[in-house]
Amino acid sequence: MDNPLHQFEVTTLIPINVLGYDISFTNSALFMFLAIVSIFSLFYLGLRHRAIVPGKLQSLVELIFEFAETMTEENIGPDSLKFLPFVLSLFLFILFGNMLGMIPYAFTFTSQIILTFALAAIVFVGVTLVGFLTHGVKFLGHFMPSGVPIVLAPLIVPIEMISYLSRPVSLSIRLFANMMAGHTMLKVFAIFTIALGFFGISTIIVNILLIGFEFLVAFLQAYVFSVLTCLYLKDALSTH
Amino acid sequence: MPPKKPNQKDDLSDFKQLAFRASIDMVSAIIIGVGVGYFGDMYWSYAPLGILIGFCFGAAAGFLNVYRGVKKLQDTDSERL
Image 1 (tube, rainbow over the protein chains, first blue to last red):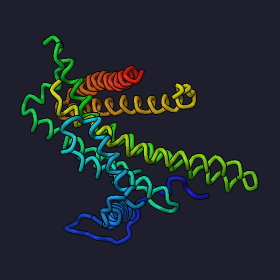
Image 2 (image 1 turned 180 degrees about the horizontal axis):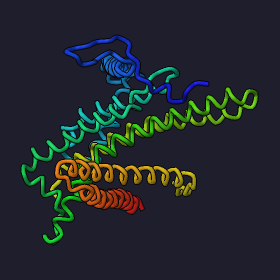
Image 3 (image 1 turned 90 degrees about the vertical axis):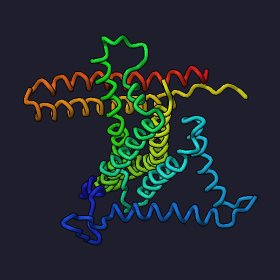
Image 4 (image 1 turned 90 degrees about the horizontal axis):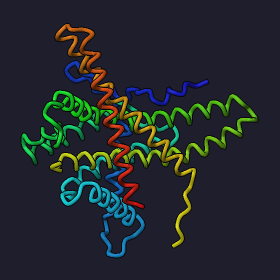
């Protein structure tokens, strides 16, 4: 019987070694590359004609763009257009990673915590930089909410700081845990199907439902990640 | 347009999402608090004081995270009503 966690194993496809560092081309890297290629080809093919009455592909691209535009506008506010390219690329990369992972035998790179943590760290550093660039040193005032007596500062400031530092952790764990749990569950039910023989039909029905649910989760998690990025950006931009 | 009937199943899945989010918010703050305390202990050999204080602050920050998440949800809910 196969191991349900086998699908998350990173295997080296082309070994590359630079100055003692292992930067091999792995299956994870392959699917990241595929995600980027499919995003670019979707946008290239969709926007090739730039018709006034859009075709199917162009409508799809416009739909995705407008979806991200309203999302950033609703969550960030008037300055949203500056951050649209970042949020849209983040959303598309995660969405395509999740969706490519739904293809049988494909590797889901968003189920690797190192990748989700790297994305969350980019968001965290970016948001902190935006905060400091817009407010200067006053940005540190976010750690001391207005109206709090100064006596409580030694308690409030560390709590606020830990709360702020926990953002990239919760952001990365949320995406990674959702993808890993869903894919493991699919595999476990698939193993039940083989083990039960004829009665495996019942688990096939469960698995069909779960696959539908997984598609929902794949979209929802990409959406949640980008919405939270927008909310953090709004937090950094606002002055209390 | 007729008013939409409240769907119990929708509420339940919303609640599950909320519970999942709240648990991750809570745990991640504790991870950071304990991590800071642990490394503080390694540098200033006051063990196990750092890890204890770190845990307390982390748990407090976790509750703050959960409180803020739920409050945000409540605010959007009351806007919708």
